[in-house]
Length: 238
Image 1 (cartoon, rainbow, N blue to C red):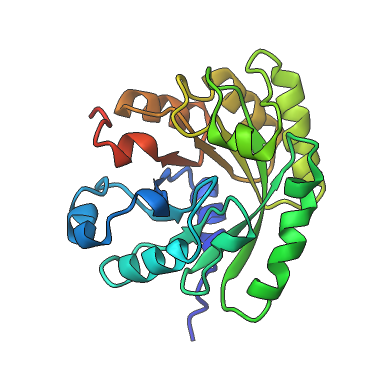
Image 2: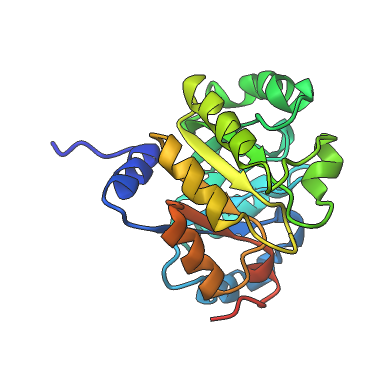
């Protein structure tokens, strides 16, 4: 019998082989289920994953959206939750996020503890992920909700040290995030420095609005890039 790779193992293998991955991020509160077929058609042709989540999401919306998309897409559906209420057993995997760039215990461990009763009896693949919020030029919903200050793009060493602390504490992925609707994405210099320091895959998201910016992130070392706002608004520039 052929052993099936886990979703984490697939990401790790792709990173090892330098195969770049692309995720479309869906905010459940902004998703129109009546247009799900249109949604699938406009997915980037190179998309490998669908991430689902937002900083604040109406109760039960995540589960409804996951089930709707599951009916029309075979791409892995991975939860990217803003809090414990956004967990759906119908998804394939869960980025078990810790906001390691902040010092608010609510998003370092409290939300994680509150989620345990929901996830322990599901078939969700749990992927420990260190989440690092980086200044993207404007206040984002993540910053407002988490009440944490993003790390400056000029302080590359602090970002690298934070990422390494995540790896040393057992995180399997590091997510560098400029925030939804960021004016500018995480810089190539930051991605390069983090990639050089880490032994685990790097996810990069926030502020990526064009294929040029996407390619710059890949070239700098991003293993998986996430496109959210530009995809939702049909403003991604090919």
